[in-house]
Length: 322
Image 1 (cartoon, rainbow, N blue to C red):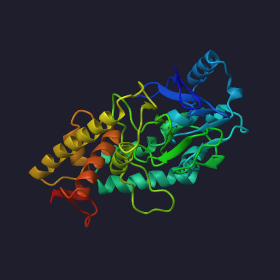
Image 2: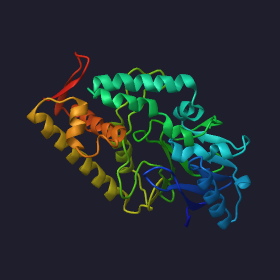
Image 3: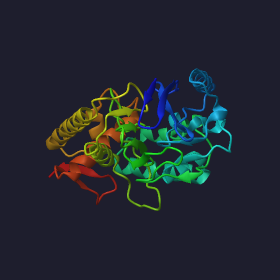
């Protein structure tokens, strides 16, 4: 699909992924420089689909002048390895350790989640999952960023397009916004038919306290309510036109889910793991990391608004109503 913006053309390419989310959307923006936003996973199937769809709009991979990545997840960055090292790669600095996948970083990630599992009261039978924690990175890349993109920066070669930092789904998440047209290239910040997971991640940049991704995600999408957005190109699924209505709906549904969790805790104090089992009784064992991230997100939200409190004096943390 091609859409005219104020000074550019945006082309949407849909690439297959090995993940349950299905196809990922990447975008070619025709400006002073031909810019690719996100690249898809590192699979031969995705690379063939990319070349084919790129050819349909009159280009080859060699025509790409620069690549902007919205966040570090493998389905958005893996094919960076298929591009020449001469092609600049731009993104938030928090992408760096995920893209390079150093052994030290992977060990730090595993250690971080081991500690979290204890604090959340996770059943020991789920600890072996930590050995598979880095498996999705098999379709990621080994690449370095050429330069960093931060809040308010205009992308070189894309006149009028500015960066908005939008952490939550990932700590590295950014979106591209063309203010004059109101068009947003949004990565996984806002999706039409599903709510992006507020995924747990280890703290970066020397931080000691873990991020609160649900609170970050709520803040990131709430910021869009104050922006005149006419259209969103998402990282997955259909394009979004009724943007503010969808954001209001997403915030409402999240608050309703949190209230369900509060009602569980009102009956008896729970660990995060117990809350996850109660919230997702048929899914928690099959989609453990996703459901735990979702549950912890609701707990963080409830603590933040003063509905529950968490006792951190013991090795395993307990949540009770305030």
